[in-house]
Length: 250
Length: 156
Ligand code: SF4
Ligand code: SF4
Image (tube, rainbow over all chains, first blue to last red; front, side):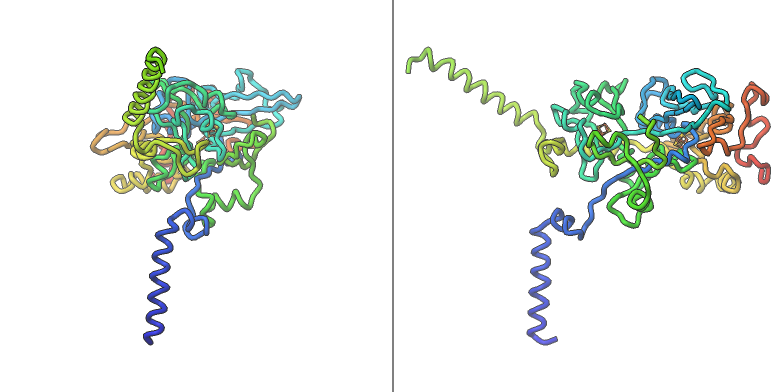
């Protein structure tokens, strides 16, 4: 290597190191050099059989009192009769599964059913979360990887977020007496595990993924297949996507 | 200026000073506007780590398989291989330290979650081999006749 080349490479390496430390992670990531994680969830309603194992696992994993009718995630049942009547229910959030064909307590004869399906629901971890916007004390907030968390020490229990969430996913934790909701099992996903509901689901109806990781199958499905989000008209930009969406789903 | 005008002013100034001092003491140093600005970023950064430290309870079948090799192998050969062990055995927590023994859920209702037949043909539920609970040996635990690790009877 000539002295000229040596000086040139030395200068370039030095400048590179200096630049990256000055610019920091943010600019590098916006330039596509480091892509930040962004958690998304895919629900395949075609696969759900309404066994409720996800709801059970979620309650146990996240310490939500088992016999109180509040849940971080729940499974709804929709039965549409041939005359157009829609029967929808979710007793105890579907915690014990659906054993009898009795939506809302009404036994529907098989030949009267036009269609019937199950829809798992959870916090949508909105990109523009109204719950975060209304929280007066900064207890509900959004992390950089797109998960909305509730700071139990900071929450004053005013209930604004419960009112603001268009999806009705929030409730008061019966023990901690503060606002509570699904957080994608933040303690699991940040350790490389999957959320408890996804692990518990035997039928593959639930999947978490990173939308910014092009190699991730969940990201691929969301980007290349026909998916839908709930209540798009609210402009909250949910991170939970649905395969097999039906306009009856509220 | 007359002192009866100044005195309330001093009180107000003192009050404001107290509020500012209290704020410095009460508000933690990591509380403030995050990267996403005031509307979505305002929070106590330390809480992210508090949530990350929340206890994991469900460990998954890879955790079970190291010790329970034969049980693992038998269930993995069966149609029940899609079900994680802890769905029936309960969350492992720190097993084998705590709890030393897991409680197996042998309730009929637990099996019926999938095997009670529902005529919902738009779902995979209709494809699962199911029974009508009232007609099929009511009040008897399924496990008294069926081996859940080998529901087809090929490996016991
Ligand atoms: S679904 Fe509700 S609780 Fe969840 S982020 Fe959106 S507004 Fe907030
Ligand atoms: S565990 Fe899976 S199949 Fe069962 S109710 Fe939940 S999402 Fe549906």
